[in-house]
Image (cartoon, rainbow, N blue to C red; front, top):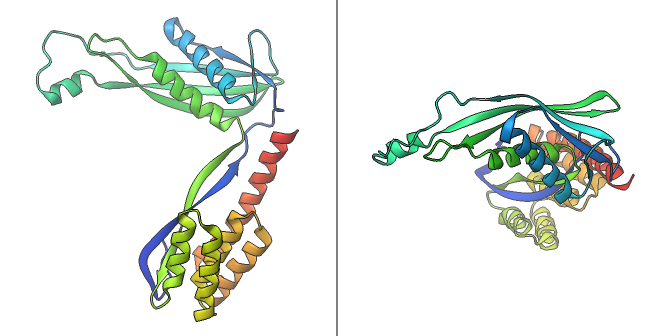
Length: 260
């Protein structure tokens, strides 16, 4: 965290939402076919987990035979050299934890569209074993499916930014706390009150930039961030302007994917 000169090291975290577009430009409602290059129960659980995730999300459809694109899982590697064995002795807590240790499943997930690779991600999930040495494929495969399908559908991500307290101007911190609680209009009034007390307070300008960003008023948000940076140049303020550009581009792409 960067702390500007004259500010407290204590920052209030303000939470916002941003759009994350799909990493593929498949149209909404496209049919995805799941191909799992694995053997035995792992293959079945992978297909089931992905098909369930696709159906639950509702952005795409599940293809049973052929589809618009394939979710292809290959290079499936499973570390099962020494699964735990129930020898009738469980020992103390440490021994039990070691006895029920986890292994890692390494997967590579490809989505193929019109025979052209457009997405690839190496995924891993922890596979836990019971005391009889039976792996929990279901939970691991569901974890893999959730990670991949989150990449493949536009969605909203919650994130936070830190607003620093300003000595002698408590309205800045009060504005941040109001916004953190979801009272954005109250936060706006308090941020303006902070500027009335000190028109050259950059953190109050930064707070107003965050408020405008939350309202998707990016032009106004940029103006406040630029004013903050002109009053006290800092990477925190200049970086916020760059972040706005990235946020707008991501939001535009996500909305295009949602509406096409």
